Amino acid sequence: MFEMPERMTQTPEPMSSGMKEPDTLASPPLASTGVRFSVVVPVYNEQQVVSVTHARLKAVMDSLGEPYELIFVDDGSADDTPALLRDIAESDANVRVLRFSRNFGHQAAIKAGIDHALGDAVIVIDGDLQDPPELIPKLVEQWRAGYQVVYAKRTDRQGETWFKRWSATTFYRLLRLLTDVQIPLDTGDFRLMDRQVCDVLRSIPEKHPFVRGLVAWVGFPQASVEYVREPRFAGTSKYSMTKMVKLSMDAVTSFSAKPLQLPLYAGLLLSVLSLAGLAYTACRSTLSGHAVSAVDVLTLVNLFVDGLVFLSLGIAGQYIARIYDEARNRPLYIVERRLGFGEHPYQQK
Ligand code: UDP
Ligand code: MG
Image (cartoon, rainbow, N blue to C red; front, side):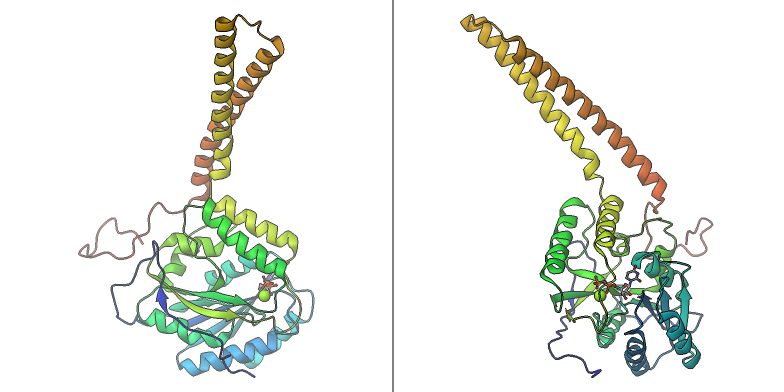
């Protein structure tokens, strides 16, 4: 029952465009905390699944033979999940539980897990077993090869409605069009991140974190491992339509200023076209002696003024984008490694 499905493929190909490959093969040293791996599992009303998830994760992590912790983040569940997690934590010393005071959302749960994780590598995995725990050793293999972010990329999604498949596919493609950060297609939050990447994520204080976007944004050598997304083990999706819309809005607004540029382009187009229209009307009446229609002129002047209004909205948008940039307070740059600096007086972590 807990065996790896045969369909699951593992093609550890490096990410293409913009993704860096590692230039080191050195195995990272064990963190001072003594924890090698942290597995972060967000759960919300998963009473039907959580015990099986724990058993499967435990089997996989034990097989890796290094110290690990399983961090279950209970996102304000209202069913038996909290009681089950308490029992699990009591019976397994590797388990830690973070319980939210209410439902704050999947992304907040992931962020909280990363913030509390101690491991050299942190693996984020959904609690409903759509992401097979048995893929973790493949992610770890890539990490040991020097990649600091290893994505699990879905080649197929099973047991999901056509609407879910269609909306997910459209969402990833639209996001790619709108944003400057190359967020890998068809990847969810199932991934492994190195301690250095997690430290950068911890320092980002965003109020609407879109974790998979942030992970793409931070850089570092990244690779992907392909897998077939399984149907849910039990229960139903906890991503309501409202939550999906909110996630898409968070993704677009935190990684793209393009919507703010739209009035600028619309304004420019409208002003230029209406001016051309006015010039054409003036030429036509001068050359052919036609009387100028007052309605035409008024309409064109109106359109021109509308264009100016749009233009100024677009210009204001550019300033808003800058203010937003400052308010998000993302680091201006991230240093991966320093060579030859020694104990530099301005050494920045
Ligand atoms: N989840 C969560 N908070 C939420 C919604 C979902 O922590 O508000 C968890 C959920 O328990 C699961 C993971 O996030 O472990 C993914 O959610 P789900 O499987 O419902 O989403 P789907 O796979 O249908 O997109
Ligand atoms: Mg799911």
